[in-house]
Image (cartoon, rainbow, N blue to C red; front, side, top):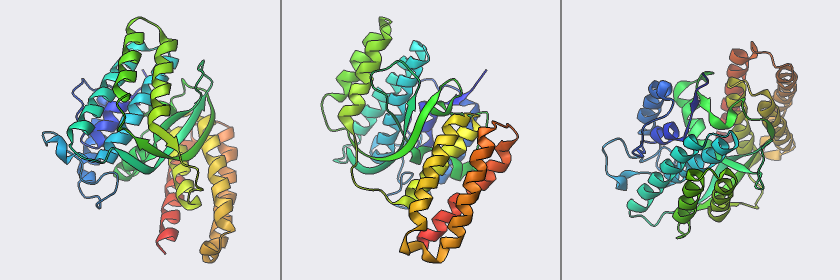
Length: 312
């Protein structure tokens, strides 16, 4: 049986206890390590100041909670596309509870800019093609574990889903409106009646109401790192089409960096990295399962290299 780290695990990564029975908690040891690591994050980072189990909601990092909320809502849409209404209802319940935590935190911070997200499109029957999954959640998982775990991957990377495109966008998330919970309620009611089409519509409208894709051109180095994060998870899940799209966009980001004067001293390294990316794309196209360990280490090194270049 396939195991996917659903939104409840993503919530637990940040210590957000949503009051439901966890799904697929064979990854609990990984999650526990991530929670402990998050305590040491610098102020303002996605893992900083998060609420631990038993800690009052006021300690919750609102940005992390908002990212988790988006993950849960979009997971519900994927569950609907997979004809899993019970799972979708659980995702909706988790999203409702996370939203309650954000509101109970008694903070004015319910709007957040520059939230990197994987914008996924799938071969699914929906009038709203885009799904958004905040990347910071899964970057923290990789930082904690050091490598991907092929048996426990996010739902968005599932091989049950046919990916038709993947890219990184930057969102503004605004949960201050009073229409967020009504959308969740309407989706839950539709799921209870078995009306999957209407449930998907309500959740998609919710996403459009709270998430805005920023029009400014993002930093190419940051975008490349985020595409590499997506590629690592897709490869670990054996979703090679998703990995191929993520690597294509990473290569385009590296092309922008290569031409930038800011990275002139690293130009030869960037050229070599692009050649290696092309080689990895060819390997991914062959859908070779032996690719996993080697590719994960390679992608991790590229991510570290890009991070080091930014610092210098």
